[in-house]
Length: 253
Image (cartoon, rainbow, N blue to C red):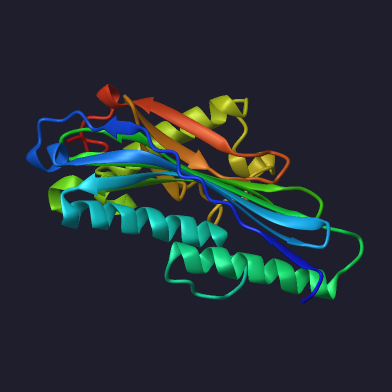
């Protein structure tokens, strides 16, 4: 393609960030912040990817498990078609290939794509490591899209990712706390149910816990992304609870 201009630049910026811990497994790993900016252009229009995420090193098996989990999440955010990339590099190539295909099919009006992905460490103890991922993308259309997701790794079990059932010890109680906070944030009158209010997407008419939940410093966070429980205009809803009030309700270790 003669009018294809490829500009690819990747700058990795490293700064030492060490996990303070008394646990032997945690003591053997550290992480550095890695940043990359990549761009591919067709004529004067470009697609850009901006990445920022922690890269772990130290204990080989544990670091590999953590880095693999981070890569899988970044790849998931990056995929816009049904392709199944098995590496971060492959996902980048697939994203740019999709942009080239899009520009070939829709030359006018000129459209640029943007994808910004961020992963940051938000929680670290002797046995747990929490990360928060943020995705912002604009691929045309009426508005950009944004999404966030928490991942929690169990260092005691070799860096396996904890599922909701692993973190939530008392689902009924957490639902009760979440519903109370949710109603308060959205200023619902006591006598009005979520169903009667009509603004919310419910699960068979019932309130539910979000897909994204995790640890941030001394809090446990429940995050409802846009479209999960409400319209795009409503945006996301974030509920925060002090960990010292969740004994027996969520995993604390």
